[in-house]
Length: 95
Length: 358
Image (cartoon, rainbow over all chains, first blue to last red; front, side):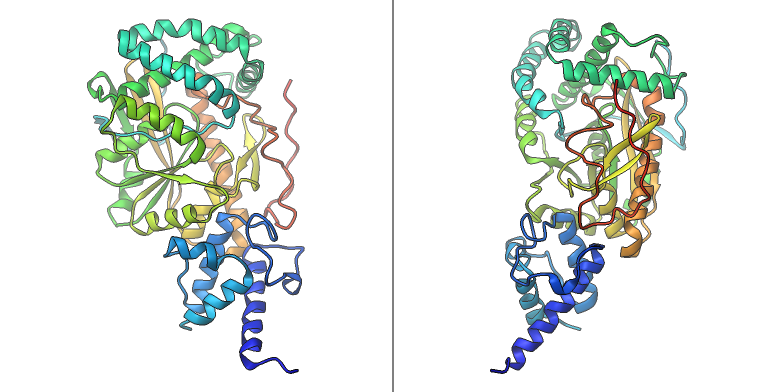
């Protein structure tokens, strides 16, 4: 069964995001492809912290024109995983 | 008492009346501090209210003696620090050439207690009791005047919460970044002293990204964000920069240095040092002018900034040695490991291992 176009677009964004994350956070031993889209980003999983969140939000803003961090309650959900980031970016990108 | 030499970068000097509010003190040795402090702080407040500032100073001696006797970790940390200071800065004021002894440790703790009593005075509104000389405030105001936010980096030397008082004199919002758990105890104490005190703190929960974004908003609004640069804390607690301090590499948290680089925010070293029973000298020194750094260069730039911070801190330590209050093994703590996060480069060549404490 072929993936829908929407799924492919989302996967592309997810991979792009993974590359951005690895680059921005200088995660030298990690390949973007090996990051699980559904894995938690913070505390568990990738184990990022609040400073990492800031760095990620800066590169995402530069790349997609999407401002992150404005709504404190939203943040928790958006930064849950690469998948949730990708969904937010897809819905809000202005590039 | 010998007077302090003129500080390194004095431009203008100006007198200021302290005008407000509290920032909380973070304690890496918090298990010791928390156990003793709830009782100790209450006792000190009672003394202060009961017999005033001066007599409270005398009453401190038995408390301090007990503390020195009962807390070998803190005692050893003080001895180790004084030894390192003596070796790195033979010219340091008041530090004996001989091996540090218990009486030096007593003096060290007593100075710390005096600083706390002074803070009670500030928060209780007794401004007229103090003369505050401010050096280098233009390092801060030149940016604020352009609507640009500034990061103030302080340390556990002297009285860092006096800085907020000075900054408030200029009517700019100051946001102090503190650990949630410690903030509550100390805020409660200060509120008891001054119920009208307007505390503006950003309580950092290391597991939450909310506070990091709140800091960004403060910077965007052109406000001051005050951070402590000498302890691991709420910003990226794992990552450290090992840079030279008093003759050996010490682990400084990377977060407070990385954060202003992320935002392209100017960084100003800020210290308030007691120069006499009723006088303080506040020093502001530019550490970074806020140019934006590309992501790949940031770890190295953060390390450079940390190095500059440590150098200037060391210089001020030599002038006010007993006002250092990191009463733990600063050069090799269990909390801050020298290994970088397994997935991150720390952007630096490996530095020599810290000399082990005696």
